[in-house]
Length: 112
Length: 113
Image (cartoon, rainbow over all chains, first blue to last red; front, side, top):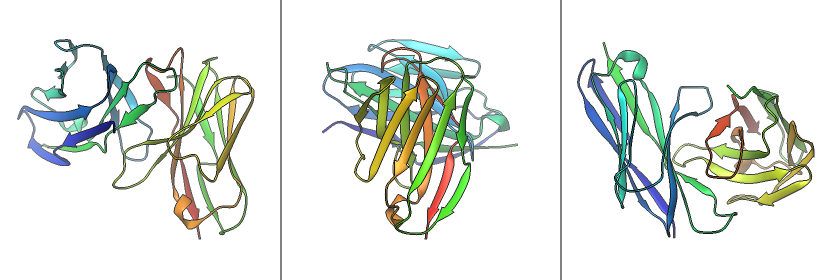
């Protein structure tokens, strides 16, 4: 069964303290891995798509990396406005109806 | 932003009553989705549409139906609401196939008493 596991569930960091969020997945034939940011009371906002192991993408203080078993979202020198829940999602399989599966998310809180 | 609105934003209803949630998009995206989000669970796909009048079931479709008569509107109906359907419902769209990024609406908080 396809699965997505995110860790840790919650993370508190001081402003400027870099860290990484993990997304482990088991899927039959990864077609894409997605990272989203979700602020309280709002819908998720797209951040990155990664397609193959070794791929990396960056946006401001965020960098996403991908291996054959997991993805990391690295946060460098975070600011309080980076506080949010970060969601990972994967799509596997070879059929059009192979859906995207979301993890439960990591709640990130950056203390000023 | 993809210009996605959802209505209503909040609703309280009684068990057994029918409920319809509406999603409206202004970006002419072909694909539209309905998800529910509950504590302890990731976003779970209820139904999706890949074109006008073309819909398919997702992971948790029991008790829900959908309709899409126009590109811009995707309706989610709970035929007879149950307390287990208390949740936050999100609509999303994507420009092309399932691999493309999804744009989410602001969500509808539904409480079934």
